[in-house]
Length: 342
Image 1 (cartoon, rainbow, N blue to C red):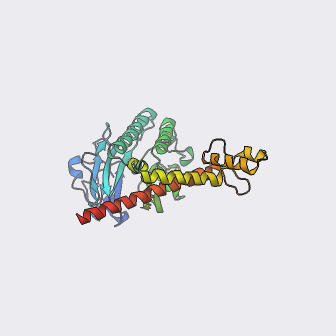
Image 2: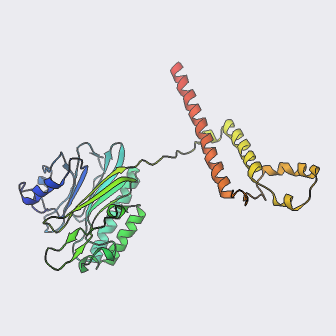
Image 3: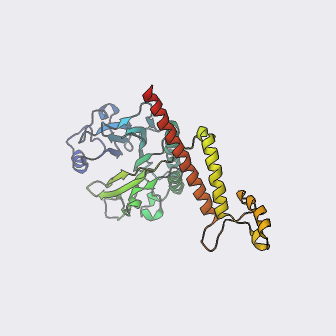
């Protein structure tokens, strides 16, 4: 995309306008050479405006992240790499959720040490933003200039950086990032050498830690050496499990009810193997029965029904959580009723 922001009617600019859809929320461009003062006025289509950028005048490098105007960049969250032109990241408020959006352009030369330094910096920026802004939602896209797996490339330059490839895989594991092309079962190569050498690689990636639903991935080839990679997905909302409150756990109602419930569970599912091994009369059995309220020496595994200790533990934990939530809802309703009366 070099020099295309100064020449709005260039063929690359026309290509972008043809590829970008109305529903596009974020667009990441790499290998962009443009004046930072010029990029602020750049316009592609459908209201997409540059929200993040890291640029310099060298022949290679440059990252620009476009976004819809309704996705607001949180003030103070903007981050760039120490070396300009490689990382542009920030935290956006997207429909009530904080999402880390990052564009990345890896070292194009086969210098493993430089590539590792850039990958380390990207890793640290994502970790810092997750900690400061209390979010685990990450969307990372760009030209990594390295293949995460040797099978993704037949170009020597893209598989000659093994440390960078290992660090990329480690970063994906640490931040729970999934490769959307792999998830959609469309791991097509995104870079093709324009000559007749037949070299190609998959070095352009879209990675996310968000729960993905209804995923669609498209790879569009054109006259440039990199394909246009597009991912469309809906964010699946995970069911939230709220923490249990200390003041409810210490309340008389919860303590009494939970104690009675646990006693009933132990009496129902726990059995003492010593009672089965000895022939006790009714009086001895009656004396031993109160001991069933404690789980010391008791077994929960029942081969006849398939019930195990893990079943008992999971049931008790779930039911106590439901008991806590029921008390919390009734307390909240009582508090709301008092406020209305006042």
